[in-house]
Length: 191
Image 1 (cartoon, one colour):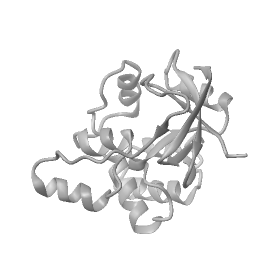
Image 2 (cartoon, helix red, strand yellow; image 1 turned 45 degrees about the vertical axis):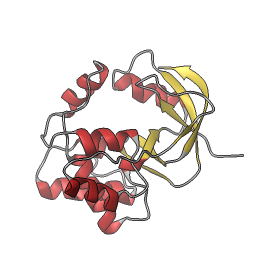
Image 3 (tube, one colour; image 1 turned 60 degrees about the vertical axis):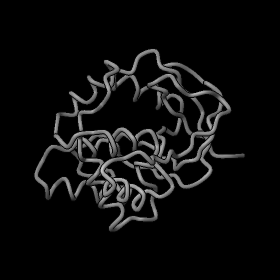
């Protein structure tokens, strides 16, 4: 039996039985940026990668503002370059793990998916099964919301990619990174 995780469809765009694939972008300007994307992500990017790597502006905002924007359905052009730092640490020390820019995210159980979605304010969103065809990695999502010194943020990025919970003042929210392609199963609930 294939391993199954659960994803919250915040954009209400998933369809049971479909395959989620990486998307290649060939219209990036200037050419130097197209070359960078082609070199760093030759197989393409996930929707998360499109939003947080290609489209976001580099500015720091609070985790609370991120959550509010997502709940309000706003495009997260809010930047939050923490994903870029996490990617650089992954490439340097943990390249065996999937890139956040090439994943769909999920949780280990339907109940945990509901609990986390509710804590983030995602109301009335469908929850789907998701079946990986490649790598997965489980990490503490709370570590992404660090607002501290660069040294501490770097430490937390390493803790994340080591699969550790991080310092005890951080709650533990176990997210599953699911490398694409992956297959969407049936809808199993609502948030």
